[in-house]
Image 1: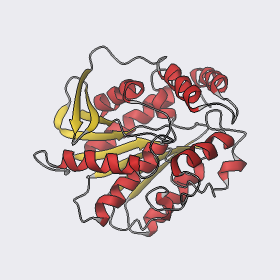
Image 2: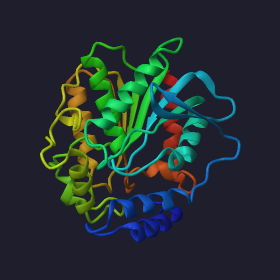
Image 3: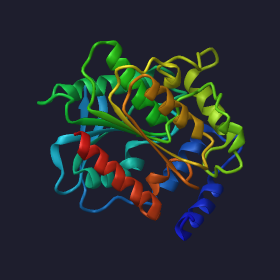
Image 4: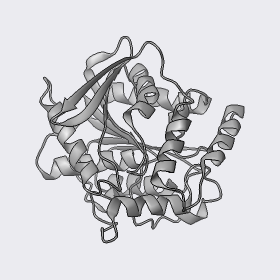
Length: 296
Protein backbone atom coordinates (compact mmCIF):
# COMPACT_ATOMS: atom_id res chain seq x y z
CA UNK A 1 0.00 0.00 0.00
CA UNK A 2 1.42 3.45 -0.91
CA UNK A 3 2.55 5.67 1.94
CA UNK A 4 0.61 8.66 3.25
CA UNK A 5 3.35 10.85 1.81
CA UNK A 6 2.63 9.35 -1.60
CA UNK A 7 -1.05 10.26 -1.35
CA UNK A 8 -0.13 13.86 -0.52
CA UNK A 9 2.21 14.05 -3.48
CA UNK A 10 -0.55 12.95 -5.85
CA UNK A 11 -2.50 16.06 -4.92
CA UNK A 12 0.49 18.23 -5.81
CA UNK A 13 0.79 16.50 -9.17
CA UNK A 14 -2.83 17.12 -10.05
CA UNK A 15 -2.45 20.81 -9.33
CA UNK A 16 0.28 20.96 -11.98
CA UNK A 17 -1.64 19.34 -14.78
CA UNK A 18 -2.78 21.67 -17.51
CA UNK A 19 -4.60 21.21 -20.74
CA UNK A 20 -3.08 21.04 -24.20
CA UNK A 21 -3.35 24.81 -24.44
CA UNK A 22 -0.67 25.28 -21.77
CA UNK A 23 2.38 26.99 -23.22
CA UNK A 24 5.93 25.65 -23.05
CA UNK A 25 6.86 28.50 -20.75
CA UNK A 26 4.01 27.65 -18.37
CA UNK A 27 4.94 23.98 -18.39
CA UNK A 28 8.59 24.77 -17.65
CA UNK A 29 7.67 27.12 -14.83
CA UNK A 30 5.35 24.50 -13.34
CA UNK A 31 8.09 21.89 -13.29
CA UNK A 32 10.65 24.25 -11.77
CA UNK A 33 8.14 25.23 -9.07
CA UNK A 34 7.50 21.57 -8.21
CA UNK A 35 11.20 20.73 -8.10
CA UNK A 36 11.86 23.76 -5.87
CA UNK A 37 9.77 22.10 -3.15
CA UNK A 38 12.62 19.63 -2.68
CA UNK A 39 15.79 21.64 -1.96
CA UNK A 40 19.21 20.04 -2.24
CA UNK A 41 21.17 19.00 0.82
CA UNK A 42 23.45 21.68 2.18
CA UNK A 43 26.57 19.50 2.14
CA UNK A 44 26.59 18.99 -1.63
CA UNK A 45 29.32 20.51 -3.80
CA UNK A 46 28.59 21.84 -7.29
CA UNK A 47 31.20 22.46 -9.96
CA UNK A 48 30.04 23.87 -13.32
CA UNK A 49 32.12 23.08 -16.37
CA UNK A 50 31.92 22.84 -20.15
CA UNK A 51 32.19 19.49 -21.91
CA UNK A 52 33.42 20.48 -25.36
CA UNK A 53 31.07 23.45 -25.24
CA UNK A 54 28.13 21.64 -23.57
CA UNK A 55 27.26 23.08 -20.13
CA UNK A 56 27.59 20.41 -17.42
CA UNK A 57 27.71 20.41 -13.65
CA UNK A 58 29.38 18.03 -11.22
CA UNK A 59 27.35 17.21 -8.13
CA UNK A 60 29.30 15.66 -5.29
CA UNK A 61 28.13 14.34 -1.93
CA UNK A 62 30.72 13.91 0.84
CA UNK A 63 32.65 10.66 0.56
CA UNK A 64 32.02 10.19 -3.15
CA UNK A 65 34.60 8.34 -5.25
CA UNK A 66 35.79 10.73 -8.01
CA UNK A 67 36.59 7.77 -10.25
CA UNK A 68 33.01 6.45 -10.12
CA UNK A 69 30.75 8.67 -12.23
CA UNK A 70 27.04 8.75 -12.97
CA UNK A 71 26.37 10.67 -16.18
CA UNK A 72 22.83 11.87 -15.49
CA UNK A 73 20.38 13.04 -18.17
CA UNK A 74 17.36 14.82 -16.77
CA UNK A 75 13.78 14.22 -17.83
CA UNK A 76 11.08 16.57 -19.04
CA UNK A 77 9.86 15.31 -22.39
CA UNK A 78 12.87 16.92 -24.13
CA UNK A 79 11.07 20.22 -23.41
CA UNK A 80 11.31 20.76 -19.64
CA UNK A 81 13.89 20.21 -16.93
CA UNK A 82 17.17 21.84 -15.99
CA UNK A 83 20.36 21.35 -14.04
CA UNK A 84 19.07 23.40 -11.06
CA UNK A 85 15.86 21.38 -10.81
CA UNK A 86 17.83 18.11 -10.68
CA UNK A 87 20.57 19.08 -8.21
CA UNK A 88 18.75 17.63 -5.22
CA UNK A 89 18.07 14.31 -6.95
CA UNK A 90 21.61 14.15 -8.34
CA UNK A 91 22.87 14.68 -4.81
CA UNK A 92 20.81 11.75 -3.55
CA UNK A 93 22.21 9.53 -6.29
CA UNK A 94 25.73 10.73 -5.53
CA UNK A 95 25.29 9.83 -1.87
CA UNK A 96 23.67 6.45 -2.54
CA UNK A 97 26.16 5.43 -5.23
CA UNK A 98 29.21 7.04 -3.60
CA UNK A 99 29.83 8.59 -7.02
CA UNK A 100 30.32 11.95 -8.67
CA UNK A 101 27.25 12.84 -10.74
CA UNK A 102 27.60 14.83 -13.95
CA UNK A 103 24.42 16.63 -15.00
CA UNK A 104 24.22 17.60 -18.67
CA UNK A 105 22.42 20.80 -19.68
CA UNK A 106 21.42 19.53 -23.11
CA UNK A 107 19.42 21.70 -25.50
CA UNK A 108 15.62 21.56 -25.26
CA UNK A 109 12.79 21.56 -27.79
CA UNK A 110 11.01 23.21 -29.46
CA UNK A 111 13.88 25.69 -29.78
CA UNK A 112 16.26 22.81 -30.56
CA UNK A 113 14.62 19.75 -32.08
CA UNK A 114 15.85 16.20 -32.52
CA UNK A 115 18.69 15.27 -32.73
CA UNK A 116 20.06 18.25 -30.77
CA UNK A 117 19.68 16.56 -27.37
CA UNK A 118 21.34 13.38 -28.63
CA UNK A 119 24.19 15.34 -30.18
CA UNK A 120 24.79 17.18 -26.90
CA UNK A 121 24.89 14.13 -24.64
CA UNK A 122 27.10 12.22 -27.09
CA UNK A 123 29.54 15.13 -27.10
CA UNK A 124 29.48 15.32 -23.30
CA UNK A 125 30.07 11.58 -22.97
CA UNK A 126 32.98 11.63 -25.42
CA UNK A 127 34.49 14.44 -23.37
CA UNK A 128 34.01 12.38 -20.21
CA UNK A 129 35.66 9.39 -21.90
CA UNK A 130 38.91 11.33 -22.17
CA UNK A 131 39.32 11.28 -18.39
CA UNK A 132 41.72 8.69 -16.94
CA UNK A 133 39.98 5.32 -16.98
CA UNK A 134 37.66 6.29 -19.81
CA UNK A 135 34.10 5.06 -19.36
CA UNK A 136 34.97 1.88 -17.48
CA UNK A 137 33.56 3.28 -14.21
CA UNK A 138 30.83 5.44 -15.71
CA UNK A 139 27.12 4.61 -15.49
CA UNK A 140 24.73 6.62 -17.64
CA UNK A 141 21.34 7.28 -16.07
CA UNK A 142 18.22 9.27 -16.78
CA UNK A 143 14.53 9.57 -16.10
CA UNK A 144 11.62 9.86 -18.54
CA UNK A 145 13.00 11.54 -21.68
CA UNK A 146 16.41 11.35 -20.03
CA UNK A 147 16.03 7.58 -19.81
CA UNK A 148 15.29 7.39 -23.50
CA UNK A 149 18.19 9.73 -24.14
CA UNK A 150 20.48 7.44 -22.14
CA UNK A 151 19.53 4.58 -24.45
CA UNK A 152 20.05 6.78 -27.52
CA UNK A 153 23.50 7.68 -26.20
CA UNK A 154 24.46 4.00 -25.85
CA UNK A 155 23.18 3.18 -29.33
CA UNK A 156 25.00 6.13 -30.90
CA UNK A 157 28.28 5.29 -29.18
CA UNK A 158 28.03 1.62 -30.15
CA UNK A 159 27.24 2.40 -33.77
CA UNK A 160 30.27 4.69 -34.00
CA UNK A 161 32.56 2.05 -32.48
CA UNK A 162 33.15 4.14 -29.36
CA UNK A 163 33.68 2.45 -25.97
CA UNK A 164 30.51 2.23 -23.87
CA UNK A 165 29.76 3.11 -20.25
CA UNK A 166 29.76 0.25 -17.76
CA UNK A 167 25.97 0.18 -17.35
CA UNK A 168 22.80 2.25 -17.60
CA UNK A 169 19.89 3.11 -15.31
CA UNK A 170 16.61 4.08 -16.96
CA UNK A 171 13.90 5.46 -14.67
CA UNK A 172 10.45 5.50 -16.31
CA UNK A 173 12.16 5.90 -19.70
CA UNK A 174 10.39 7.35 -22.71
CA UNK A 175 11.37 4.95 -25.48
CA UNK A 176 8.52 5.17 -28.00
CA UNK A 177 7.61 8.61 -29.34
CA UNK A 178 5.14 6.93 -31.69
CA UNK A 179 3.12 6.24 -28.52
CA UNK A 180 2.06 2.73 -29.53
CA UNK A 181 2.10 1.21 -26.04
CA UNK A 182 -1.24 -0.01 -24.76
CA UNK A 183 -0.58 1.71 -21.42
CA UNK A 184 -0.73 5.16 -23.04
CA UNK A 185 -4.51 4.97 -22.90
CA UNK A 186 -5.16 1.96 -20.66
CA UNK A 187 -3.35 3.53 -17.68
CA UNK A 188 -4.14 7.18 -18.35
CA UNK A 189 -6.63 7.26 -15.48
CA UNK A 190 -3.89 6.09 -13.08
CA UNK A 191 -1.14 8.57 -14.01
CA UNK A 192 -1.36 11.89 -12.12
CA UNK A 193 1.79 13.40 -13.62
CA UNK A 194 1.78 12.66 -17.36
CA UNK A 195 -1.35 13.16 -19.45
CA UNK A 196 -2.08 11.79 -22.90
CA UNK A 197 -2.22 15.29 -24.46
CA UNK A 198 1.03 16.37 -22.80
CA UNK A 199 3.04 13.32 -23.85
CA UNK A 200 1.92 13.64 -27.46
CA UNK A 201 2.57 17.40 -27.42
CA UNK A 202 6.12 17.00 -26.11
CA UNK A 203 6.91 14.36 -28.73
CA UNK A 204 5.69 16.68 -31.48
CA UNK A 205 7.73 19.58 -30.10
CA UNK A 206 10.86 17.43 -30.08
CA UNK A 207 10.39 15.82 -33.48
CA UNK A 208 8.75 18.68 -35.38
CA UNK A 209 5.94 18.25 -37.86
CA UNK A 210 7.80 15.87 -40.15
CA UNK A 211 10.04 14.01 -37.72
CA UNK A 212 10.04 10.22 -37.64
CA UNK A 213 8.65 9.05 -34.27
CA UNK A 214 10.25 5.64 -34.82
CA UNK A 215 13.76 6.88 -35.50
CA UNK A 216 15.96 4.66 -33.30
CA UNK A 217 17.75 7.60 -31.67
CA UNK A 218 14.44 9.31 -30.86
CA UNK A 219 12.61 6.11 -29.91
CA UNK A 220 15.16 3.49 -28.79
CA UNK A 221 12.46 0.83 -28.67
CA UNK A 222 12.89 0.57 -32.45
CA UNK A 223 16.69 0.30 -32.32
CA UNK A 224 18.96 -2.71 -32.55
CA UNK A 225 19.89 -3.22 -28.89
CA UNK A 226 22.60 -5.82 -29.35
CA UNK A 227 25.92 -5.22 -27.63
CA UNK A 228 24.68 -2.74 -25.04
CA UNK A 229 25.83 -2.83 -21.41
CA UNK A 230 23.78 -3.99 -18.43
CA UNK A 231 20.53 -2.10 -17.88
CA UNK A 232 18.45 -1.35 -14.80
CA UNK A 233 14.95 -0.32 -15.89
CA UNK A 234 12.54 1.01 -13.25
CA UNK A 235 8.86 1.75 -13.85
CA UNK A 236 5.69 2.12 -11.82
CA UNK A 237 2.40 0.37 -12.48
CA UNK A 238 0.56 3.72 -12.55
CA UNK A 239 2.36 5.17 -15.57
CA UNK A 240 1.04 5.76 -19.06
CA UNK A 241 4.62 5.07 -20.22
CA UNK A 242 4.64 1.71 -18.41
CA UNK A 243 4.88 -0.21 -21.68
CA UNK A 244 7.83 1.91 -22.85
CA UNK A 245 9.81 0.23 -20.06
CA UNK A 246 8.49 -3.31 -20.21
CA UNK A 247 8.85 -3.55 -23.99
CA UNK A 248 12.36 -2.07 -23.84
CA UNK A 249 13.38 -4.65 -21.23
CA UNK A 250 11.87 -7.48 -23.25
CA UNK A 251 13.57 -6.42 -26.48
CA UNK A 252 16.92 -5.84 -24.78
CA UNK A 253 16.84 -9.27 -23.17
CA UNK A 254 16.02 -10.84 -26.52
CA UNK A 255 19.10 -9.06 -27.91
CA UNK A 256 21.31 -10.62 -25.25
CA UNK A 257 21.53 -7.63 -22.92
CA UNK A 258 21.68 -8.19 -19.16
CA UNK A 259 18.49 -6.47 -17.95
CA UNK A 260 17.08 -5.92 -14.49
CA UNK A 261 13.46 -4.76 -14.68
CA UNK A 262 11.87 -3.40 -11.52
CA UNK A 263 8.12 -2.75 -11.61
CA UNK A 264 6.96 -0.79 -8.56
CA UNK A 265 3.38 -1.42 -7.51
CA UNK A 266 1.17 1.70 -7.46
CA UNK A 267 4.09 4.03 -8.21
CA UNK A 268 3.83 6.87 -10.71
CA UNK A 269 6.10 8.40 -13.32
CA UNK A 270 9.68 9.09 -12.10
CA UNK A 271 8.71 8.42 -8.48
CA UNK A 272 12.37 8.05 -7.33
CA UNK A 273 12.81 11.78 -8.04
CA UNK A 274 10.61 12.52 -5.02
CA UNK A 275 12.84 10.82 -2.46
CA UNK A 276 12.75 13.91 -0.27
CA UNK A 277 9.28 12.89 0.90
CA UNK A 278 8.51 9.37 -0.36
CA UNK A 279 9.76 6.28 1.48
CA UNK A 280 9.19 4.28 -1.72
CA UNK A 281 11.44 6.69 -3.61
CA UNK A 282 14.15 6.52 -0.96
CA UNK A 283 14.20 2.74 -1.33
CA UNK A 284 14.47 3.09 -5.11
CA UNK A 285 17.39 5.53 -4.85
CA UNK A 286 19.14 3.09 -2.52
CA UNK A 287 18.75 0.31 -5.10
CA UNK A 288 20.11 2.60 -7.81
CA UNK A 289 23.11 3.32 -5.63
CA UNK A 290 23.76 -0.38 -5.05
CA UNK A 291 23.46 -1.07 -8.79
CA UNK A 292 25.93 1.69 -9.68
CA UNK A 293 28.46 0.45 -7.15
CA UNK A 294 28.12 -3.11 -8.43
CA UNK A 295 28.85 -2.05 -12.01
CA UNK A 296 31.31 0.83 -11.58
